[in-house]
Length: 587
Image 1 (tube, helix red, strand yellow):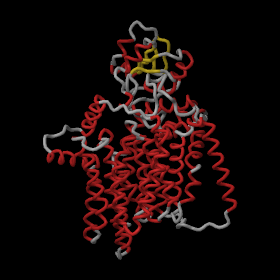
Image 2 (tube, helix red, strand yellow; image 1 turned 30 degrees about the vertical axis):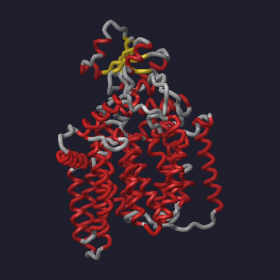
Image 3 (tube, helix red, strand yellow; image 1 turned 180 degrees about the horizontal axis):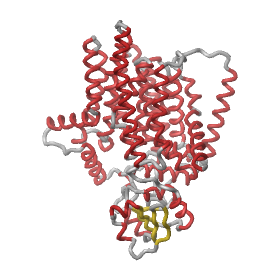
Image 4 (tube, helix red, strand yellow; image 1 turned 135 degrees about the vertical axis):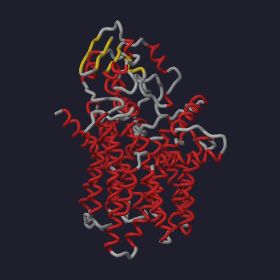
């Protein structure tokens, strides 16, 4: 019954904060189809909460009361204004189509892993858990990482993902585990919807949906992030996609109101995760220049309103920048550079030509052969039907992205430490998707025999969607059922015992990448060996914790026993104070 209650509460809170007040802002988006408006409602609403969370502490207000009050007022305004409306103008075909049914089916498929998990995998996920716990403890953004870490400031690491998780939990630790599960899964279908929203600005709804499902589902780069807990970076990437689409819509319609909505979603990107933000900034500069060229008759409007948009974004980011502390020491930068090279799986070569080839090979590897072949076939068809001009803009973006990835060997660009190659590749996948979308458009618009058109279209979409479904199971459900990282069939009883019996200032020793990593999240106690982001990797951070108080408890799992981890030597001559379902605690 507790499981049902917990999931019901977080689903209810999720629906509340994902819809309100975004549904009010979405009214500013005119002449937009129904599906796009629904997607915009969710993204704008989440963007609002991510941004407003940094203003609430300035007013010295509690997060839970403030958030639920704003949501409640939004609901009241929504229903009052709806009653006053007499007529509504249709903005698109609301008839249910086959591609709508397929989209809903795949969204349910993407969310289905929630049925298989107790706690999601990933060492990073455990870190996101204790950051969310700190927000709940403080009923708002905290001022430090204590008692989890000896870090006396908060703000350098983006906390937007954690704010949303806290809100969905009702800012209540009782429902925290269910909120962590939900948000870690919802991030991926949310990013897919952002992808579809962007494609919809250039292609038909049917083409946008099928292309989004195929390219999002087949690639292993984006979905593979769930295995190590890279959910915030994927969420930020989804906001990048949506923001590109919303700004494009604003320019297409010359709508300042749409740009005002875009300020919320663009400002949310760095507040959710810094790494996709830098690639987004570089691409935005290129995109701005292309928009000026393409809409040169309206260049004055674009320049003026881009200036207003930039000012609004900086205003929304002001409280975050006020708390931000730059920890970019030479030692830290050197560590990050080494990490970037290891993530690409190779060392830098001695000459530029060889590095260019190595980088090209790594991009191909991360994109995958299926997407490369599919993109190549689509490109060849485009050239055959003389649609080569449609390639120019995506190709320009691909060149820029290639340069950003190649930069990992040289670090000549500003903020190179945040240009992680394996995540810049996300954006190249989007560029390639335009080739398939253009080819599907050729099938839609050219005067083929109807049987031939249906046959070709069916083969492409069926094969792509089947591969997409396979990737969902391989990347989501299989790892979650095995849960090879962090927790294997965890229970809450050991955490309940810690909460009831261990001292408030107790320090736990636990193995990395095991159930003990979740001790800070669910017990609010410090743990040696917990996951820490680079910017919080203070020199001798574990020694600092150890010096403050000697370790009092040792958290041992079946994995420790099987692998004979170092903790097994530490528990000799210790007293076992708890044992349950493969978990033992010694003092």
